Image (cartoon, one colour):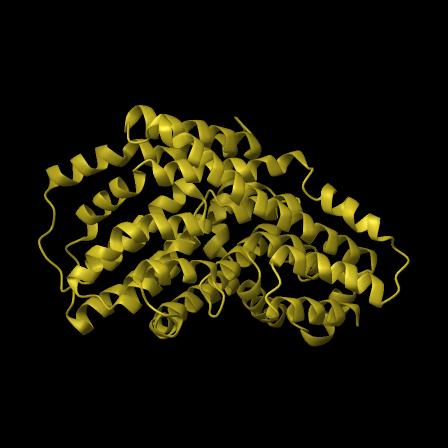
Length: 427
């Protein structure tokens, strides 16, 4: 009953246009008052503050800062140039370059919004000149941008690791194959679009010298995920320390190696990253307050009994989990959704023998899909603005991309070896 009440209150506030932080806090306070719980409102505020106090959360603003530096430091253009030399000759080549560019940029930023904005602003004019439909361009940028949180390093995976007490290194390793599969699925749609519309039938392939020159230009940036993942997995530094290393390395690459980031831009970069970090931390704090109330009312145990009553088999539980996360991802950003939903489903997942790392990948991928699901997807709004199209048009063009992603999601969910094979090799 309590779960139904808080769900109703939250969605009512969200549909009224209440900002996410206030919707989460309002849900906690109104539920506490309406149901006459004995918990003082001050306790909710204490948990709001306590939710952002753990030291490991320092990694979140640091990764946001490193992503902002990479985005402003001209890395995106070099990654796109490299992707163009490799795949530009294929049918739908510019679309494929967009996808590959997002995959490589995601590997150095860890942010979906930053990936969609950085790659989209560079690729959209070229795709328009080649004859791509603006709606398809926007839909592709929206979907490919979410690869930034699936391919490691990933900020949502980092948060899930802390919430679920799961190895962040293993989560990052497990995200590699799913990220590649999502990318391949989107590339297949790009080939179909290029051939069926005739806008991009393919062209001349790059020479070996051009490929080598392009690779050398972006190699310093591509070293960043190798350093981060290698350092975490080898135990040289913790995930929190890795965020600091990523920030320093991003500054080094942008200011020393490429010399494309002037010192005069640093204040605006710091300001933008601080604003984004403040919003993220406020949302995490509000979610923590609501999660505290949910835990005190033993909702996780109630959820376990409810799930067992509905889903008698493991496959049925996984199907139910995916449906819930897809819907949740439409209304909540990945980070608050992780903080709120992970404690609810962890006991049930453990009862069905699901590995926490596998569960974290299922969470991340579903919530990534939610980022471009109408009507309120985060990357969807960014992509629509970049491509200059309305939400109705971009939503229609999104259908084949969305369906291809769902096919990959089914594989990740039901073929455990897909995300877990690399993890098993390292255990």
